[in-house]
Image (tube, rainbow, N blue to C red; front, side, top):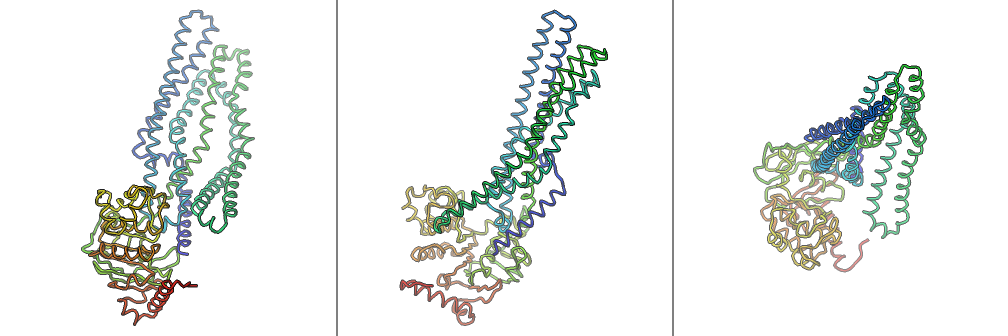
Length: 607
């Protein structure tokens, strides 16, 4: 329920952010200048070279018209035509050269920018509250960071320089034709109204259709990630057919959204593409009439015919970028929405640092969305002590531990470490104080050695092996196929749940942080290995502030302090023997634990 609440909270914020974006009405170039940052000068260089290339591409048309003009005037000197022909070749070579330089600059800059956008997004996720990240569908996040960010390449690498250049080209040609004969200049644009009508027809309801394609694409990605991630459960419960059907329906819906959009656009698109470039439909007949009447010379008529052939093509190229621009604007909006999400309230440089490693919670209130789950918690955890958090499932134990680990910000109250509010410390400084191990141990798709070394990247191979000996992992690691060099697979899939937890604990021990939080860290281990881990944790956490969340009460009976939590409130606190006498809830939990343990040892079954 808490995860559902956090999802609703996030999507509510996402909608609010998207509404804000609509109000801002940012265009593609607003986003480009926002994200380009230090790369703006490179994009400006790319545009300048592209415009120079366009100018060079126009000159051959003018020279060609001049050659026809001289031919009609009776010029028979071969050298004149050879000179202009070589000049045409030179300008065409220059056009290709400047275009190549422009494209090279824009591509190099774009790939750097896309890389930085991805780094910025991932860095942003590290500064967001855990609930916000958990509330975002992993398929959607992966799609935005990888595929959709990558799909901006055509816009940033091509549209930025070529969009500007291809707008300049027809403008220059039109001005030149205007200097020859203003009537013919207007006639050369006679097909544009038809193009405008076709475009208006084609883009009718395009926003709705585009939004539908984005929604179905996100749904397809989320369904695919869910299907692949849950394949074990699907096979175990024989739900392959129904689960696959959900994926097939999502894929079909996604395909149909694009097909429907294409079918709605194909007629106006074809009409516009056929009629718009046909400038000769108006220039040839009416220009011929003007020439016969004597108001337009034959040489100028030929020149205008030649130039008008290159007038509309660049505009069509510009229009062809419209889909890419719309798509990129949407993607930039999604990226911007993530970057605008509220972060954990932490300074860049710590304003205060802890004097010791004791923890104090004062009036802590916290909730997922509108539902409050912690109600005014006051708790003192002494430096170097062992504190166990126990209580029924859903009572708020893990939430409390995650607040201490700074994965969320409290709604009210404060969390103090050594007298310093954790909101006065930078994320890096506070992270150095905490080592956190949850029951859902995550390992990266790397070797066992590198997963453990992530606790302290500077650790040597010998130090990694030494910490595994102290944490009781060495023997089972050496029993793996390649020992410490064994690749654990995505999320540690090549290892058992207990093995993943033991490596996670070794990683936390390698960090050697003064505060250690174990959230059901032995949930998946068998009794024998649990005993090994308990001895290792006891040894390696000596002198550290240790917070343990456990359902197996026998593992925490020697704690300096046991805190009983129920429904987001502290029910009682004290040592094991004290709570057995003073707290009925704890006594009932202990009796249930002892009964379950005895039944398990006798080989009985517990309903």
